[in-house]
Image (cartoon, rainbow, N blue to C red; front, side):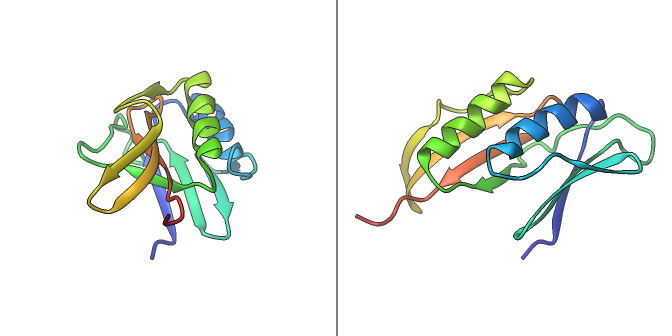
Length: 127
């Protein structure tokens, strides 16, 4: 459905370090520089970070969340730990199973250094 997701950041190098570590837990290589942006590519699409081209300060979208598909609960936990160790902050509940209207999910949430809300999601097989 999506070709790419791009988020605005205020300190490109701080955010590059954060996303290099975070996305590295998914087997995605370090960001590739392109002008004043970094891109992370996988078979499923591209994720990018950029300073705003209008020169104004980047800000997060209130109510917005960017979700990353995980292969296991352990990958969710590694993703969350890498984010915290590289300038992210935890939000929502601690990583773990949530039961809801869409079924049982293993979720981990954090905010990047600019406040963008991110989610690691693993959908366990039906029992």
